[in-house]
Image 1: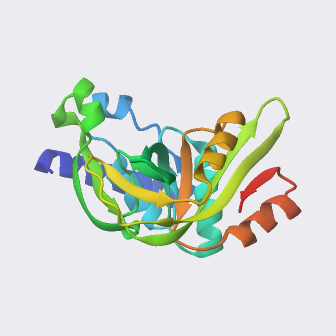
Image 2: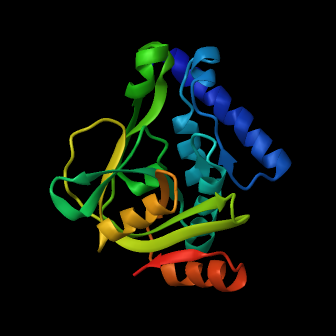
Length: 228
């Protein structure tokens, strides 16, 4: 990272940490583009990565129910959660999907990582204003995924939950990336599309599906689809 970007990153980290501490903040939905790039000159991804690794889950794109999903999995496992885009299928394998973000992944979920510039937004705000993205690949691991969302018509919170395996399949792209194997993935994708769930989901490198489902369905009475 250029030194001017590193200094801005440090300043933002200190200010947000103080705000979190003073207000007992449990999680953040960050408005991550394009205002902060245009007015401050960095992307906030690395700050969000640091916060999530410090167990203050930080979701991008002001995804508040994504933040809640991160917090729930974190609370159940004691481990940081990451918010990911459910992207394309991996090659022609029907049970494998690409997980991607620009990214703000906590570095503890990654095999190796570095801070660089965010390639997507650099096309509109310039590379010099786009440093701060965490680049690298996710560890091979079991994982639990959870997505909560609001249903305006029903006036409730709904969601889906399941488990899978993060593989060591290689993929050549920018940002933070991983490949996940989820049994009967096409069925899950159909559920996601038909019920209007967002493209974000949350992953946690732990096996906690049953405990979390029991809490959300039995005690909160939220309609949760469990992907077995």
